[in-house]
Length: 362
Length: 274
Image (cartoon, rainbow over all chains, first blue to last red; front, side):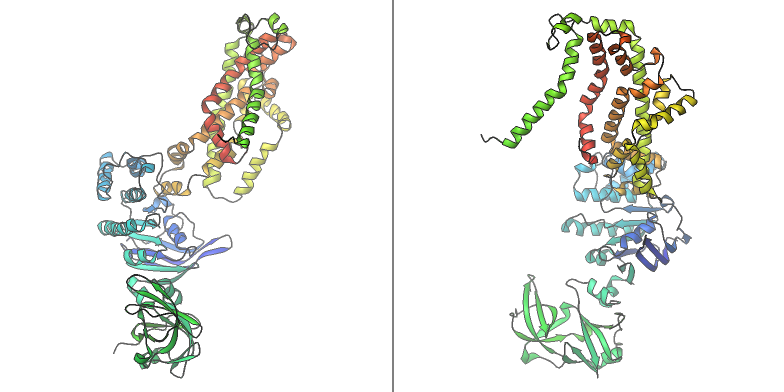
C-alpha cells in the first residue's frame, strides 16, 4: 500500500504552470527516477509528494489516501536534500536522532536505529563531529542516515549526489541501491544526470517543461524512446535526430535519397515529414569501395579522440551528425559513406514527434 | 617598506574620529573625579590633581540611586526580552511562511520605522494613561514591546538560513516552536544578541518617553536623574552631573564592548551601512 498516484496534477506559481496534467502511477517499493533538464518540474513534483508544495489542481494519492491537504509531517516520508540540510550546530548523532527525539521514540529504539544506520553508512567514529568537520561524502551519508532512521514508507531524494565528485558519486549510487534493497521503501529520486537515472532507477519518469515525456524502464527508455525529446535526452553522446522526408518508399535526408528496408516501410507508411534517429554508436562510416545499398555519401568535418574510440562529426550536405567509431581514424575532409544500422534506427512522427514504432520481429 | 597612501589616510581619519568620539567620555570621567573648584579652573585637565569620589557619594545620598538604576534595568530588560521575542516570531513568519499580502504587510510594518516619535507620542500617552500605567515603569515599557527594526534585522539574518533546514523539520513533524527553539534561534544567535543589545541600550538611554510617563522620583530612570542634575532642581553642580553621566553610560559601554563583534556583523549582513 505504498504506491503513489498522480491524477491530472497541475502546479502553477501565479501564472506560470510548472507541472502540467501529470498522470503517473508509482508502484509500492519501486525506485523511480524523476529525470529532466533544469526547470522541467521534476523537483516540484518531488516536493508535491513531500507535501512541501501545494497542488494547484488534480489529485495526489499516497497509499490509497488522497493527500492534497495532508501536512508534510503526516505523509510518512523522509527526504534527502541536495544541500543535505544538516544542522550545523548539531553533531552527526544529534542530527540523525533529532526527529526521533522530538517525536518521542523510546530511547532504546533510538539508540538501536542510530547504531544500525551509522554502521550501515560507515559513519562509526564520526558521531560526535559537527557537519563542518566532515567531507562532502560523509555529509551526504549523514543526510542519508537521518532519512533512513525514520523508516518511512516513502524515501525522497532531491539530487542527493550532485555535490559529490565523480568517483564518490559512483560509490554512492551503489550504496543507495543497497539501502533501498534492504528497506524497500517507495523511492523517488530526482536527478538531471542520466547515468544516475539509468543505474539507480527501476523506472524513469522523464520530464520536460512540466510535462511527462516518458515513463518506462531505463532499458525501454534507451532502446525505444517514446519521442524525440526522450531520444535526444537519454544517451551520451546524444542520439542523432534529423528531419527527413519519406516518399515513395525512400527516405530523403537533406535532398539525398536513401533506400529503406521493407520491414521499416510497413512501420512508416504515412508519407511526409519524419524524424530519423540513430545513436552515434550505431552509425557506420564506410569507404566508397565497401559502401552498401542503404548508404549515403558524407564528408568528415571534425574528429574527437575519446581514447578508446573516436567521435567523428560528418555532414550529409548541410546536415551534421556524429558517429562513434573504432579502428582506423578518418581524416577531416575525407569522403565516406554513411550507413545506418537499420536494426537500431528510430522513426518519429514529423508533427507530434512521437515514436512511430518498430518492425515486428519475424 | 612601501607606504600605502590609501591605508595611511584611512588610519589618520579613523584616529581623528576616535579622538572626537572618545573626547566627551574622557571629559566626563575626568571631571567627575574633580572638585567643583578644580573643574571650574581647569576644565580641560584630563588627570585630576586631587581625585575625589565626593561627587559619586553626593549622587547616592541625594537620590535613591539604587532604585533608579534598578528601574532603568527592569525597563530595558523587559523591553529587550519582549522585543526580541516578538521580532523572532514575526521574522520567522515573514521568512518561512507564504501567505497572501506578505510583502505588503512586511513593507507596511517596516515603514513604521520612519514614523517620528512625536507622531505616536500622544496616542501612546493616552493609551498608557487609560490603562492606569501613568507614573509606572510598565507604562514606559509597554509601547516598546514590539518594533520594526528588530523584525527587519532578524528577517535579514534568517533569510541566510537555507529553507531546506525548515523543510526537513516539517517533514519530520517538528512543530514551529521546536523549529524556532532548536534550529533557528541557535543559528541566528549572533543576530539575536546584537539586536538585543541595541534594544537594551536604546531603552537604557531613552529620555523623552519616560519623562512624559514618570512623575515620582522613586520611579525615575537614569536619564531622568541625569537631567535633574543639569537643571536647577538637582543643583547646577557640574561635577556631580558628570558623575551621573558616568554611572549612566557604564552599562551600555560594557555591553557594547563585550558584544561589538556581533553588532557589527549584524549590520554588515543587513545591508545597512553604519
